[in-house]
Image (cartoon, rainbow, N blue to C red; front, side):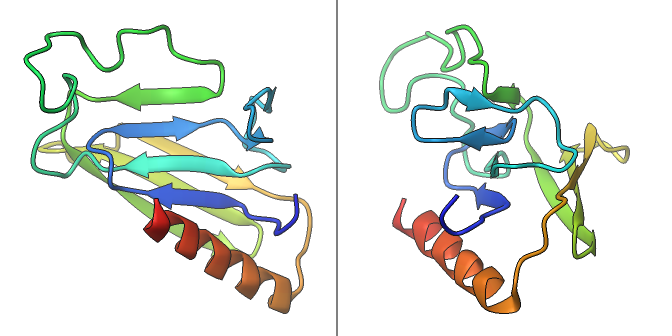
Length: 138
């Protein structure tokens, strides 16, 4: 991984999805664990928006946008419930991602993500900047 990115956080798409750690653009290298992640975890937390993308946007379609089988890289997806996400960084190697459905006090999911490697401060700052630029360009 060139920039050693740990997370890609996005919110434009009006649904919720969390990936397994995924390496390479072809999404063929999938790690089904969040312990010592060797690749970025992608989280789309956009289910607090105006309308959820339950149906194909701006069409008269009644085909669910998640009607296709869930791909291997997708750990969980939801286009039915509104909600919000929280991310707490416990220490330099551990983060906890929490997702709440609207109207519920208890978390719908709570995932701890760890990494074994240590990154220099300069590379970490560059990684965050690259991630933010990519999120805003998409």
